[in-house]
Image (tube, rainbow over all chains, first blue to last red; front, side):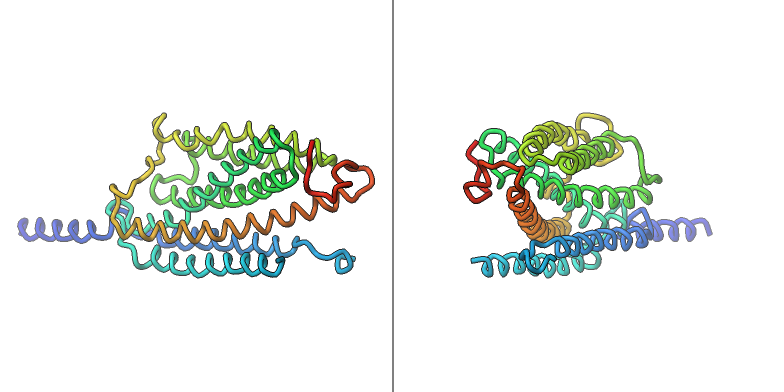
Length: 59
Length: 237
């Protein structure tokens, strides 16, 4: 019985090695990519908003 | 000529977006998980390029600031202004990404660790730089004072870079291609190039805005009659 238990524990550990010790955390990954891309999109919009325009079209 | 430049700017931005799409796919799905951090480490593909761009921006700001003090030119002043703003953008969201990475790996979003603290000091310094530019109306004084502040602010950059080696830090030391899986290196490089293309497009666009603002200021009756006389953007003093 204890041999089976030990083997199953080893198998679990071996499975975890392939995907890292920290499991999950995808919500942090998605949040990070969203923050990065949204920041750049908003800044691009702000640049477009502030773009130099001919004097006539600014009034 | 202007049409050609506009096409080039747009091309740079499109190239950046396309490369970013490829980089996102590589970072999120293609690159293998990390032995220790699992999938959470995938934040590296946006966090590290953002920080690199921020540091490059600070370096260019420093060079432009020194250049302005040696030979005053509205071009170097505008370049300094644009790199400070774009660098601050990448630095702020890069720091937020670092905090998002810190929570699942360190257990906290923030710690007064040497790397995080020196980075926060750097961002506050460049916020001060941009605030100073807003406060001073005289373009010449603004250019000189902000150039001096740009040089002082840059003194923090080597501290940011070497903080992980000089002191005991929660933050890991810089990785090298020899210490990580080749697929991870490739994904990081693709994302770094994507960020670089977008960074260049941002700086170029922001530079145009700064130059247009200078021209407008020089057209005002109270400002710099000598510079306005020669048509604007080339200063000889």
